[in-house]
View 1 (cartoon, helix red, strand yellow):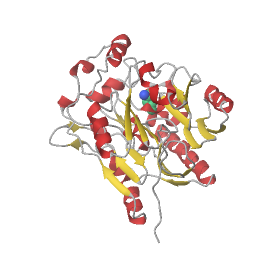
View 2: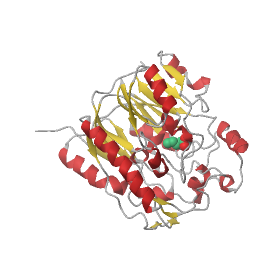
View 3: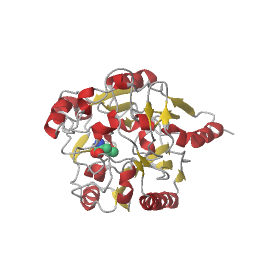
View 4: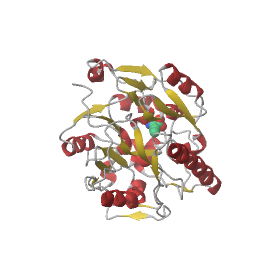
Length: 367
Ligand code: NVA
């Protein structure tokens, strides 16, 4: 008897099976070009590296475990990765880095499209081997589900030719960064295809991909050739001085409705697809916090990094009162989930998960 384990075509159909990351052995990796470009110049992350303090790992794991059991109680199957030793250095013929990152967040590494889970190329050297945390799960799915397609994008070389040296300067300043973002001049070059899975949003037949620090145009072209039955759309958000990962910028909630970060609005000339098909793009509510928690890479806009359980139900971080209120007004049932103390490990509720199975098939939302 065949059993379908892997099936997910969009960000909102009823969720039945998901991977939730772990904070085990997470490290702040040493300096490297693409990672440095993302860290704001006044951040407490600057100049730090090493294993994260154990008490912060324990607290983050407590929150991730609670989130996993909340999902399980709602009837959703939850799987967890198996942490590798992230203190191990990575050496390839082309680069060396003294430590790795962690097994958070899975959304950055794994892209589920239908019956396929694709391991992204990744664009940070410290994340080159991150897929290994998920291999035990992916091997199991492969054995259990004869239709599961386990794919891996070509591993990039990540030599210095992959990074623009002008992003390595100590002091760039936000004004210069915004100018570069407007010009689509990002830290990654077009040396070879690069993408992180969290730059991709799935809308059935359409994939919407952010071009920025972690995904270059060749990476998007690679996705286009890899998914020949999909339409792949490139988007930019020029208001973002640190453009990595689309899921604190553009958040689809259900067919016809997307939240957009009001500081990172989708430019008018990129709205045609949505406007022509009567999709509404609304400004997300303001975050409840003025600063991210300590030692956190992400911005306060993790407020909109939500996990949609079905088109009427959404998990929102429990301290994000304005975001919860807005969801309520938009007709969503809100499930509050405490996660802020795990943000430093790589993101919010969407980031810390990866879809395995959502009900439904591949629809065309933009005919
Ligand atoms: N670009 C993002 C990452 C979110 C997961 C930020 O706002 O920090």
